[in-house]
Length: 399
Image (cartoon, rainbow, N blue to C red):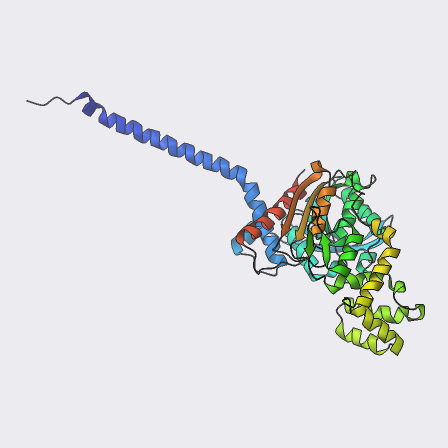
């Protein structure tokens, strides 16, 4: 006689089929959610890969092939002359081949005699353009000749206006390196340039020039919280001050001869420096030797006296107290161990930027002044720098 199945046994296959169907639906929902999440996360992932590729290229490291496929493309460059109201300047435009009408950003070189031909700047501009941006690098004569003056503020603003008009009248981003970052902030705060500048990145820049000039003498930089950053200054900063105001240090008949020695030294042209030094008279040679010794108490006293004569000129190129009307978004980046412009200056800048405009601040051990440092920084430090650059790329591409 056949046994009767219990109710639970008779419904078990149906329950198993329903369970399998439920499991399939659950997997389907999970896959759909993963696809949706990936779609939303992809812009962030893409920008992060682009930022990683940019930093690798600037550090002269090989970009991993998969990252290169996703985060970079071919770039063309063109030499142009910008007819600006403040004067015609040479410039270079980097254009992504597959996106000739891409969003535009301007990168301003630092105080460097190579100007827009400086290898690190070329690598950086090329890498940014490879991510799908048009990049303009104007060459600013005063900055190229180691002079940080108010005239350059107008040149930066005028170049931004030019780029805006050649960007379908869409405001552009401006990234200023070293002292140029401060000048870029000042340009963005000017009423005539505000509509043309969408955001500013100040990398390794100062808030107050006179405070930095004092740091070159003392090796001490006060922070906003009352603490003091102590770091031996690089000779470069003091030499730039001497070069810009050489009339304060040497006799008038000796100016041209001594200036040539300082110029060749700043240019890091050792044979040129030796040749220029060989042409000096004994008096001129003594003056030049003293100036080159930036740690000498006599030289430091003379720099302090020169600084006191140029307080107003230094204030005119300092954001502190002059950028309250800023409307552009601002990103501040500084190397933790920067001994040309101390990182405390970015803390002072942070206090100056209107709160609603300050997008990000990063003081990173991964960079020094404007160089990447692979020694010491943790993965977390490196990730923060990648994330910072990803935010800049997002701001540049944003409509």
